[in-house]
Amino acid sequence: MKRYKGYMTLEASLLMPMVICILALLIYFTYYLYGRCIISEDSYILAFRATISDKGGSPYDPEGYVFEKASDVAGKKYFGSEKPQFVPETNGKDVRVVGKSGTRHRAMGRYFLKPSGSWGFEAAGRATKRQYTRHIRILTRLSDLGRELTDLGE
Image (tube, rainbow, N blue to C red; front, side, top):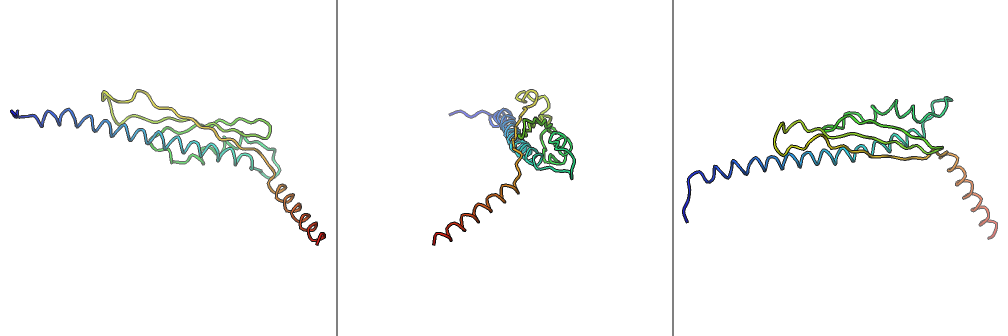
């Protein structure tokens, strides 16, 4: 077998940029998955909190609550992604919050395998307005009545 000088240099000059590019793409994929999970969680949190929000006698306004609290809930945890936008929708007692965002790709410059544009993602959370204290009181009362009926039967 004949060995050529510069074989290792040629291999390294072709292989190492590809390895670095693949590692950068894996990092972008993790940013995408992380952002998708976080936006799903934040959408549900906003929907749930909008259903239980009660501002001391003011009318029930879940959309106003979502617009007011969206930046507080989102915070600074969306690194590697754009700031999310949350859009509330109400239908009777149901509140649905749709969150949208996307990842950023600025680190790779003009490299030939750089992803074009940004990868957008969205998620929705839904919650229903219920009177939890009323439900708990009813269940407590029913269990008390059941206990009384079983005590009468003995």
